[in-house]
Image (cartoon, rainbow, N blue to C red; front, side, top):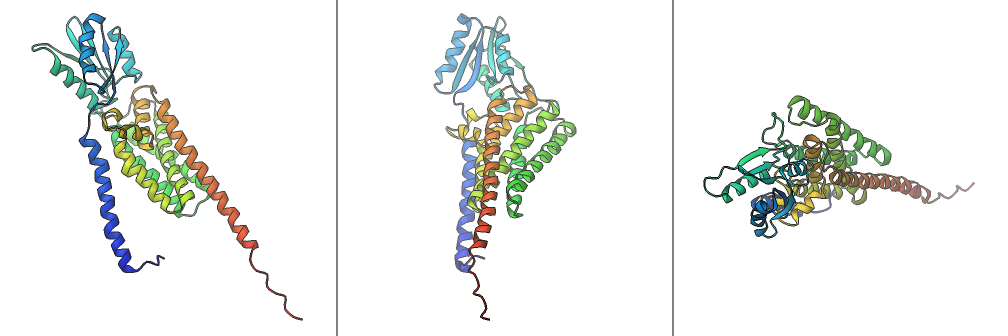
Length: 331
């Protein structure tokens, strides 16, 4: 029980809650209000003489676009499918053709369409083709963005529960892994089989959900094993209040203010959202980096849980053997 006086506890609540609310508002509202491209990878395809003016137009906005040059529309299309670029503009005899990937980022797809249309000469017809579109059950491609927060909350809850229930060492690791597996299977059953908002391999999607949940849960439990109950609060702060708005899953990491997008990619929500897009819509292209990030979070968190559990077991016998010896009764 806390030894602080009721007055101090009252003041602590009055100051802490507004501070958390202010941090949450800043973390969610500031990146959303500052959306703009920062080295956003896009492609320009076509003969050099015809594509050069279009390429220069994008490069004129210094730092906004990372322009990739392709010889023809087919090469640009392949780059989009491999998640090298978010979209491309191909120069054709009929005029510019915008190749988008709504499944990669609906916001970037709209940005590219509007940018090319606004820059085209009056009366020019701009063709648009969605190279990688989301399934019919999710025409706006919002499934990955809507999945990030539930997975983050599930992971934080798992990490908090194993800590609160006193599970240590291997038992804690087994509970975290089992919970993550059940989350992955149940969420995939709802999103893929029930709602039809995912279009990849069923078991690969389940693995992506599982790894994301395990990365969050192990991270929170690992912090708690090292720092005590305060680790749960720190984990929730990193994952929910920072990781979720910094993930860029609703837009794109390259649209967030720097270095917010980069930070978000190294936190489980951002890596999990990117991994889900890769396996659900792009046959796994671009999945390596996010999968590695999540694996590191899971491995480091589980290691901390195992070390923390072993440390607690070793401390108990030490205290047990240092108890004073009762003097023998006089006889």
